[in-house]
Image 1 (tube, rainbow, N blue to C red):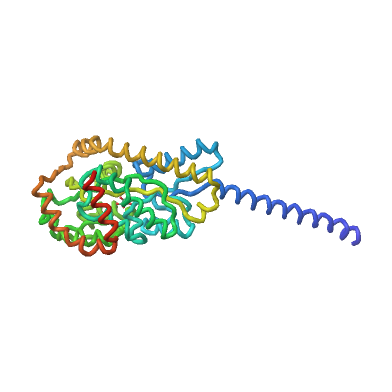
Image 2: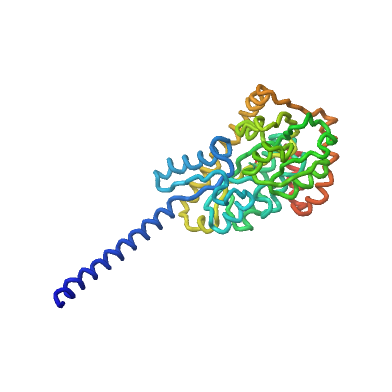
Amino acid sequence: MTSLFGSRSPSRFSLTLVGAAIALGSLAASADVEARELKVSTVLSDAFPWGQAAQKWADLVEERSDGELTLRVFPNSQLVSGDQTREFSAMRSGLIDLAVGSTINWSPQVPELNLFSLPFLMPDESAVDAITEGEAGELVFQAIESRGVVPLAWGENGFRQLSNSQGVIDEPADLEGLKIRVVGSPLFQDTFSALGANPTQMSWADAKPALTTGAVDGQENPLSVFDVARIDQVGQEHVTLWNYMNDPLIFAANQQVWSTLSDDEKALLRETAVEAGAWEIAMTREQESERLAAIQERGVTVTDLNEEQHEAFVAATEGVYEKWVPRIGEDLVEAARSAIDAR
Ligand code: X2X
């Protein structure tokens, strides 16, 4: 008995020590891994420019930190179970470390981001740049920061074009009664209602099935998304090029995570985000004409609006400004307008 007790006691003791050491070791290891591997959320995968922007960011960080810092990209809104409108909140609460996200998807939490969704505000790419690179862009970043997320750089999902399965759309009356899938901000409900359509809000994950079954007649997305996702295969035979809004992407970080990084790491993350964003914006714009050609080759009708047709859409959606400019902020809209005028 004594010998048994005597022999068990030390072995128990040492086992406990070993166990404690293992536990401590794995704690240290996981803290280490957490400190070095950051999760990046995106809606679209690297089959799309959006996902490629995030991957480029990850590649640059890995390269320049000599593997000290790793970004792991989680596409398809998987960190928020497919609900892209929860991405910003998840980043604020720490569920997501970093994101390359859409202004549309974050606008329920950051009303200022609805600026980019104001119909026909930005006529061309240089208008988008005039906003993002100037005082208005600065104000947008401040708005994000004031809601607990650190904005780092701009990217671009692109000008959103209208597609549908029913026929050519070149005047507001053509939208009458069409069921259109729209994204997360209530502003889109107002724009499409003003045009006489019947807008239905749903996530990207639900959009393609809804188009496939004909539950909705149309949708709006940049040509790159239409092309890569093969939206033409689900009956969307008509595209109207109306440039009614452009959806910039924003690279950003959770504030808590950001505060744990060294100055060098912060500088690295910011500089690589800026580089990846500039790279992705240039690529997206450069590919636009090939995208259009590819879509046309597959038999999709592409409709360009003439000046008069364009004006009819502008006039029909003016009411959206009355309701939304106060929510976005008069000063911000004014800063954006003067930047566009001065471009
Ligand atoms: O859901 C969409 O339409 C998408 C993929 O473009 C966005 O996330 C804004």
